[in-house]
Every structure is written in structure tokens, then in C-alpha cells.
Image (tube, rainbow, N blue to C red; front, top):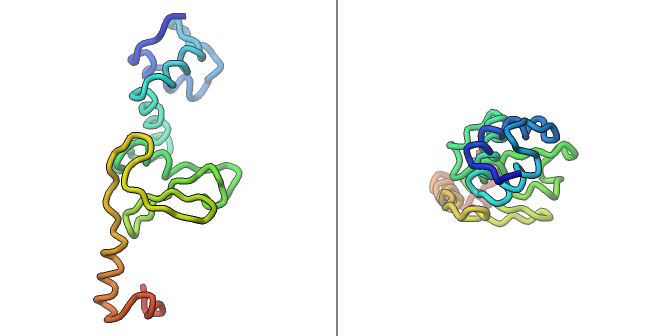
Length: 147
């Protein structure tokens, strides 16, 4: 089999995502398609985009397709994301913050670990500062008043 072009690869994404073992014709087999997937970053991103859109999520609403994919992955074996060791990227809407999570420890990140895209600046400090201004004291000291 000859190497496939990006155009052919992208056209065959729905086929290989749904029926990976059946050959689609066009002189392309699953092995050749996978070889291209693992050597072409833009086609790998196209697969992630296809998956995210299949979940009903617009990848354009995220800094990059990697964050859209990782922050929305689900695990069929674990009801809660925190229980799954394979789901280690979290997004917190309150703080507009992406984090890596492992064993209950969360580390905020500023760049996508896969492509280096800058992530939005965390709003955590701003949230606490504004809340302190509203409460007139530390949000931790007035936890019963925090909305």
C-alpha cells in the first residue's frame, strides 16, 4: 500500500472511526490509515475534531482541539471523572482554568501539553479578590456567605 494523502485520510475519518476493520477501498487499509494518523499532526487533530463534534461539542469554543477533547472525555468504567486515572485534564468554568489532575492533586496549566497553545489566564485570583471586596473579609473566613 502506498502512503495516503491528507485529503484521503480526512475523507476516510468517518469510515475508520465507525468501522475500523473494514477496508473502504480506495487502496487504503486500516494499517496505512493508522500510520498516517500517527505521523501527521494535522490529521490527528482532524480525528479529535471529528470525535468532539460527534459528542455535540464545538471545538472552536476551546483554545485548541486537544483541550476540547481531553476536557470532555468520558470513561465508560467510571461514573465520576475524578475516579478515572486516564482522565487527567479538567476545566473549571468558575475560574476559566484548565488543570491536570492526578491522585486528587490539581495543577493549573497555562499551555496545552499537546500543542503548546496558550490557555486563558485563570480567573481564580480575580474571583477571590472580588468576593473579598463584596464580603468585606476573606471568602475563607466568611464561607457561610459565599454564593
